[in-house]
Image (cartoon, rainbow, N blue to C red):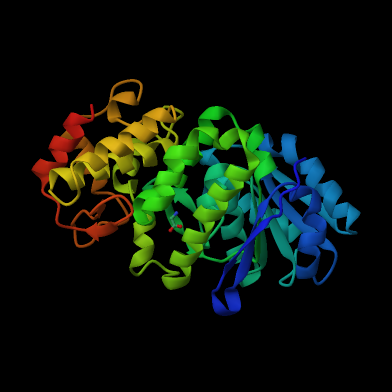
Length: 370
Ligand code: GLY
């Protein structure tokens, strides 16, 4: 293994402050890294079937080497696990395991497990601490940091939940090697988002280095750490999304409509929808005269160079018409007083929130992306 010091990002949230460590071999060191948090040498792990097969035994061995006993509940992999049923199962299992108020729950998995385990920890005995061990690129750069936890409802994604910050996040970049290329690229959609929303120099860096990221741990660590540092800054300034944190939703109004239209199925992964949504947000911004005309082409060119979906036309199969997609956007959590809210941009790295979008511009942008 190439020696590479881990990067530490501190999320300064007063009495809810915590560190995110980004580096190689962190699962193998998890026992020593988690031990300082524990009041007794015992933890409960929530994970999923896919991740358990790859990373549960090494994690439990590392905990055991540090004298920490652990038990694990393995849930089915996939978005459907973010449900009342599985939440109830997880909470009742934690109670049956006699996890106490001062204990720590470990979330070992991608965004689904992180969100569900975080919510279970938030409501168990009115709140226990939890540690995130994110195993997908998307979870490492986005969902494991910032304390959004929850489950889905038949009415929409993430509509039931709580803000509950983790006590530690260990982003082991070695685990990303086991991701299927499509999942890796979907996570990369969230990495690009950071450059597009607030850091043009990072976007330029991604244009130059993105294609080599997967095979170069130093580049990958930099990309994850920079994304996490950007997110940490935003969360520190606006923990509960009263303002600036909404910028993290760049591309998401489009994405949520496309995910809903494709039945939250494997036809469109969340990060793929974010990437297409970012491209559409720049199309819309250029059409409204807000950003330079060349910016949307630059965004689309980078997504294409990465081998990613960049347009609605890249989604396989039929989709509802533009009017139906716009109606789906009306279900978005960001709708206020019935007005759609979009994250738009004045240029690459200069995003802002707007509720002043004309339906004709929206329809034109959707039509051009088909
Ligand atoms: N994933 C967006 C946020 O954490 O606010």
